[in-house]
Length: 250
Ligand SMILES: *[C@@H]1O[C@H](CO)[C@@H](O)[C@H](O)[C@H]1NC(C)=O
Image 1 (cartoon, rainbow, N blue to C red):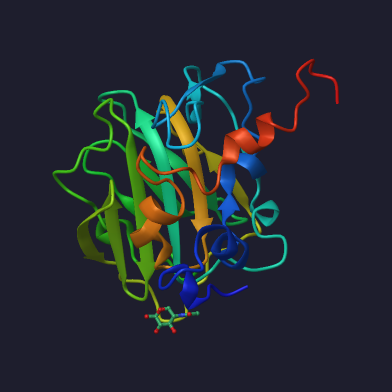
Image 2: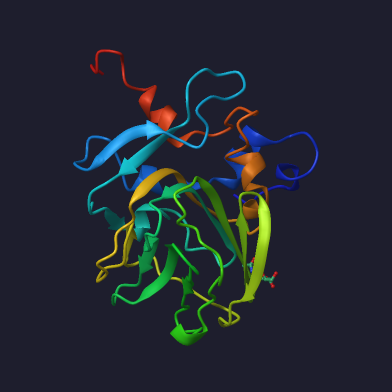
């Protein structure tokens, strides 16, 4: 299940690598669908791509939706990884501020929170409560909610978290967690908000992945959502749409 080096070096890339690094496709597991009220299928980051006439697809979310699942569904045969990447392709409504992904322990303590907005915080708390909230890494002077598409990729490794935005490394901040940190999968995973928050993610989302490889974030724009002049190696939404017959009869 470990990612092999060929994901990042040499010629054996993309699909081969996908199998090995096994991304956790959060939208798929939580079953986000255009059949939900307030969700519709729209175009995504690229309206056309090399070798394909179709546009990328994304889900437009314009209503408060409730989407959660036991975290065990994301990690059926493993625990939450110590070092990992969280990667998303989103277009948040300008000026909005919300948590895209929240993971709770069984007591309801939030252990992971990926915020989209102005000066986004990367909420992470291990099983011993480290770091405390005042030390959560905050990416100041960055606005992830400016009404434009962004590829947002966080890499968590050891005592630091790095943010890559649209394929550019922006900053590395200290993540002062313990040396044997655990994030529980006994609780729930919530999409688009925090349990007690008013704010809910508004905008479009094309992809949301967790990968058990801290290096995946650095190559998100090559291995998962490349620029529009390259085909998509892995497509959350199209893969589903293609399974549906033209008449909607399966
Ligand atoms: C996570 O990364 C740190 C820093 O690179 C390393 O010391 C540690 O062994 C890694 N943990 C696992 C489980 O791979």
